[in-house]
Image (cartoon, rainbow, N blue to C red; front, side, top):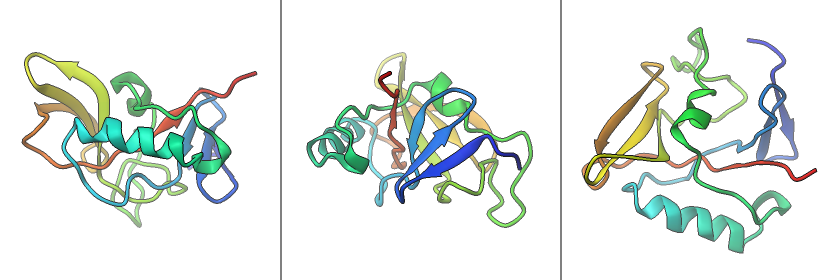
Length: 129
């Protein structure tokens, strides 16, 4: 892989290319899509990593984490600096009760019924200058 990502503290990975800051590890548990908003609110209440402006990533933002090559150890299209959660929800909705998620095993974005699947949530923040 390359030097695009840098670990900040123990819980944050900074993307040198986009400027976004990501959770090093996504949520500990899988959840339905709508519960991801509660999860992100809880991160902000607890000042996760010293910040209270975390948010659910959009489809386009989370898709920027898809690597062009598979990590041989994890089998995921995800930089090894991140923990190995395979599928993560995005904030992007499609149609009626459907939401987008990124599957790092296949390295692509998919749409599914938000209450049908349980995926992880990896919060993001845009640093304030």
